[in-house]
Length: 116
Image (tube, rainbow, N blue to C red; front, side, top):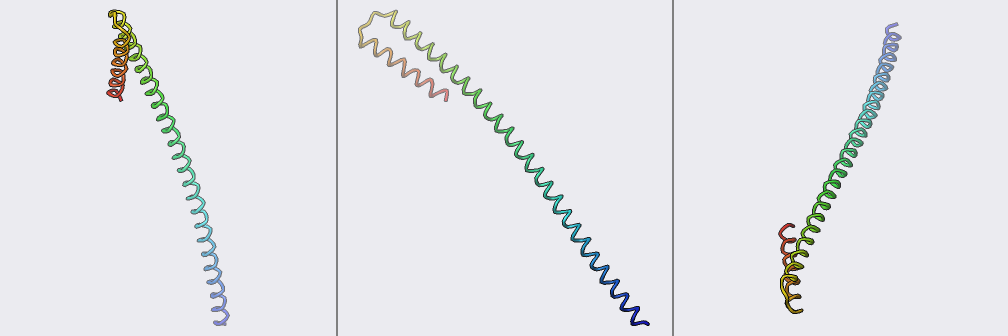
C-alpha cells in the first residue's frame, strides 16, 4: 500500500514539475514577445526622431544658403554700382578701366572669403 502511495506521489510530483516547466516556458515566451515589442517601439520612435532632426537640419541649411546667396547678390550689386560709379567719374583709358574692374573683383573675392 505504501509503495502504491509512493508511486502515486512520484507521478504527481513529475506532473507538477512538467507543469512548472511549461509555465516557465510560457512566461519566457511572453517576456521575449514583450521585449521584442518594446524594442520595435523604441526603434520606431528613434527613427522618427532622426527623421525630424534631419528635416530640421536640412531646413536650417537651406535657410542659411538662401541668406548667404541674398547677401552675396547684394554685395555683388553694390560692387558693380561702385565700379560703374568710379568708371563714370573718371575718364580713363581701357587699361585703367580694366584695372578698376579687376580691383573690384578682387575686393569682392576678399569680402566673400571674410564672410565664409
